[in-house]
Length: 333
Ligand code: AQP
Image 1 (cartoon, rainbow, N blue to C red):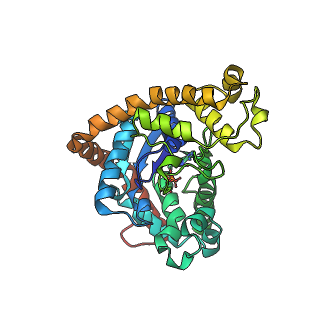
Image 2: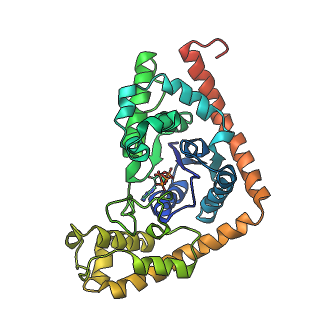
């Protein structure tokens, strides 16, 4: 069976962008004909500074978010990255396969390192090699992600191709990105040109999965928009990034196409559309956030789930790492 791997960083609270761009898709793939493995990528999170107590909390809360949103641990393997050591072990091998020049082209590194790239961690620079290891240590064939991860997945393919070529093997699969739906790039509520992000300094820029109904309504009411009414067709949203973003969010939450949403709301002013969107968001998110809160009441249960997930994962990863060492020529591989 085709195997799916994907992950989310516990670098803050889950956002609506993570939910619509990633988790919602993870849940649907779990129910299709795939073997599914989903991860809290804590080793990725520490490529930028994380307060230890916050990292621990965010990792457990992310696990609660996955489960509350519909990841079923009887159907999917749910893991925390650092609890499956083969991820980091294979990443070292891939550090020796990937080329400096490939890494230097990564736009996420440029965005995250900013102007002072000399002060970025070496881990932030090597992030895509660890991501390739996360995927390939399972021989995963399909990786559901948001639009922003496309370049990293191309690098994963390049690493697999070079490894196979250098060692004259057909060992690592060439992974397919799965970037589908109307919410592959949910934008900031304050700036239609920036993606919604858990680490944006402005909390008003995002909807957190743990926001209460009033907060969600207020953030949507204050979201940046233009003064025009909604168009009646998708092409009327061109050059209106903020309007398009709100319509896309509506469509993704309601599981409708953009044209279906506009057939209903075309001609409406934002004064009418925003409350409708807020009601829909609250209706969809409130059950998830209350279940997350319930799960977080007793973290021993979450920790138990993660320990079990790690044991299941290692049944897959340990033989693949052993075989990799063997191919490379390591004694004991
Ligand atoms: N705004 C978004 N729209 C659609 N998909 C998104 N994803 C993230 N933001 C959006 C998808 O969520 C998955 C997990 O992403 P991540 O947490 O590993 O890293 P990220 O993409 O860097 O997410 P953030 O929220 O922006 O985190 P920080 O602020 O820590 O960098 C990925 O599949 C991603 O595409």
